[in-house]
Image (tube, rainbow, N blue to C red; front, side, top):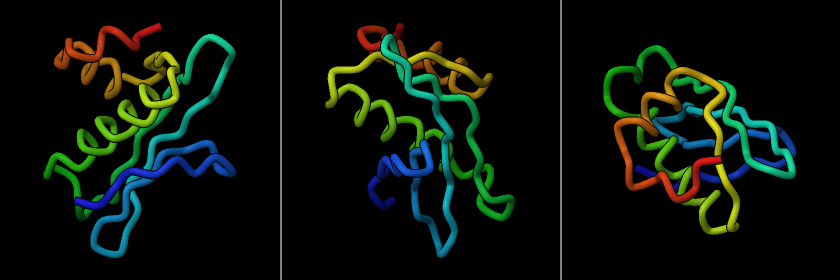
Length: 90
């Protein structure tokens, strides 16, 4: 996998995979980064790419000293299944 990047101009985290981009839209507030939607190109689904995207996004959020909030069900499920991220949950 490649590295997740923060495309601040588009307010989304991105992961380049096989010529396509998986992304997670977000809205930044003073309290937290709210991830509102994740999208993996259809041909790439079912391979754990969205999980890698969210994991990388959380690492970026943590490195900036920010908190995260789930604004979509995928991120809510990921946070529930990965309690190691409780320290950055808003």
